Image 1 (cartoon, rainbow, N blue to C red):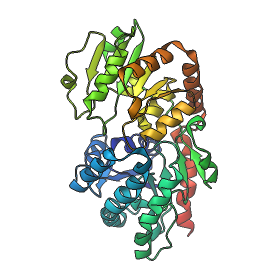
Image 2 (image 1 turned 30 degrees about the vertical axis):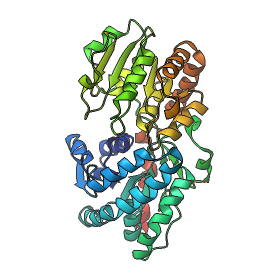
Image 3 (image 1 turned 135 degrees about the vertical axis):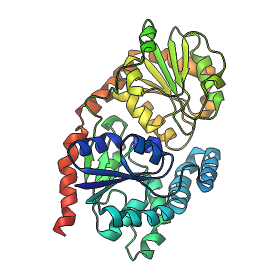
Image 4 (image 1 turned 120 degrees about the vertical axis):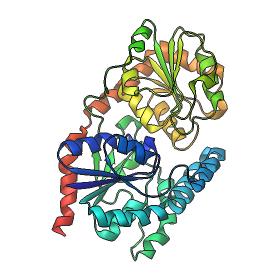
Amino acid sequence: MRVLFVTRPLVGHYYPMRPLMGALADAGDEVALATGEPLASAAAHDGIVVHRVGLANDDPAVVHNRSILQRLPPAELRRFAFSDWFVLTEMPPRVRDLEAVIDRCDPDLIIHETAEFAAPLVASVHGIPYATHAYGPLLRRDAALSAGTAAAPFWREWHLEPHPYAGLYRHLYLDICPPSLQTADIADIDAVQQVGPPSDQVQGPPPPWLGDLTRQPIVYVTLGTVFNRDHRVFSTVLEGLQQHAVNVVVTVGPNNDPASLGVQPPNVRVHRFIEQDQLLPLCSMAVVHGGAGTTFGALSWGVPLVVVPQSADQFFNAEQVAAAGAGIALMPDDQNADSVHEAARALLHDDTFRNAARRVQHEFAAMPRPAEVRDTLQDLAERRRQD
């Protein structure tokens, strides 16, 4: 089976797909990824066959849209992101490039992530079955409808009937979200296949210095790899944690300098990056931005969260975590040292949050492993041969 994965050029949209890519490759399937830079180079470094398509993440149009997104109130984020940015800006150049990729590699199946809208159109043009791969909870209906409205002219241009959600979920939805964090709208999707994390999530031995921290609780702090440039947020979080008897591990992202946070006390360690599956099993709590990869990663280890969302889908993810009882959401107007201090105190001393996070952890453990999903994908790919 030849499987082409398609994603926007963001690490946060690639990591949720990577376990399934690995499982299919291990089963002998031909796996390739179509994306832009910098993800294209990162995936190629991982040994994946890569086709470079669409705009790079540093393209001026993308940078401009990202700057607009950071200034918008949460209520307007989804419409702008899923219509103006992901469809009107990014979709046309990716459609053009994907056409050439399809001609070269002739995939049996295409798997695209929820914010990527070129793949459903190109797959429909060529009669190729495709699956929509989640990177978090199900996309809010208003965002999907915004994408559908924006994408409709492109579908008509290719003599196809427009899809209300721009092609999302038409053949299969690969759902990585545990039930406690999922929305009720999941019941409206016709074909859903859950995909849990791999059985063995730990990637190699932890760095030696981690063992020195276990004498008191460990708190992980991260703002991800995209909306992580406001060092005032890091400073606020660290100030809020400083009176707790904890060790703190901060990752500022590969594009930031750890020294930019200034001199820290001995119980605070600042790094650009650490494999979170090496660190999270040792953590008592985490303070995160609400990106789906980090949020799901922490909860898959039963780690309760203080969520300090900065942009994009992070606000929605924060709400879902709070609703599940697995953490506390601090929206931007509530993000100060005192609120962080009180939230950390609650998570460190109230077992209610830890118990809820462990409930979510058990839900993750009950979901099918990536290798168990192959038969479903094989059946989907067979549709093309039967046609």
